[in-house]
Image (cartoon, rainbow, N blue to C red; front, side, top):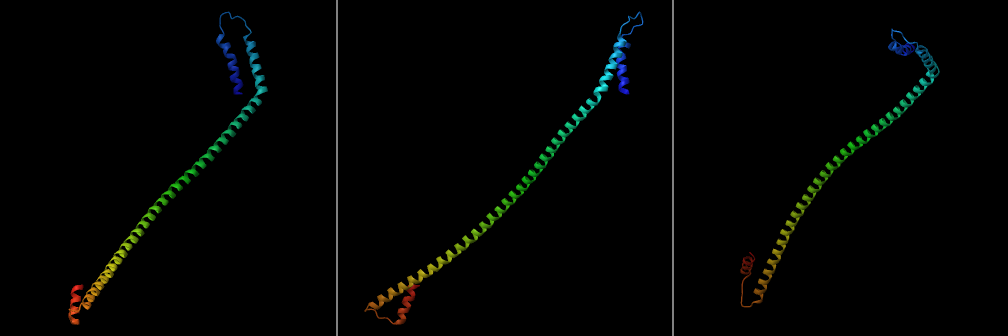
Length: 172
């Protein structure tokens, strides 16, 4: 109803604008306007349902495309969030691996240092025992040389006590 009223007002607007009060020349503007209004009403009557259906269908197509795009966007956002979570987990795992590696390095260092210290102590003990063994060997050799000299020499006659004292002095 409002549309029809608006259309009729628009149709009669030129009549009001171009009307003059002095000796108006008779034209067929009124008949043409009425014909235009009738033509517009017939077009509206014939095409209104088809135009409404077209625009309703187009609205539904646009809405379905928008829904598809929204679904794609939501799926992409979900994948992005999942990948971001995996990245954060990977960063945490990498940090844990680095910490574990540092702890392993420190553990290996302490074990190596302990092993080296133990080896140094063992080498020191072995060196001391070898020195002791070599010292005993040298003492035995010296004692046996002196005894052989004394026993082989006929000119020297000593008592066993003197001989033992002499050996002790040489060895010391």
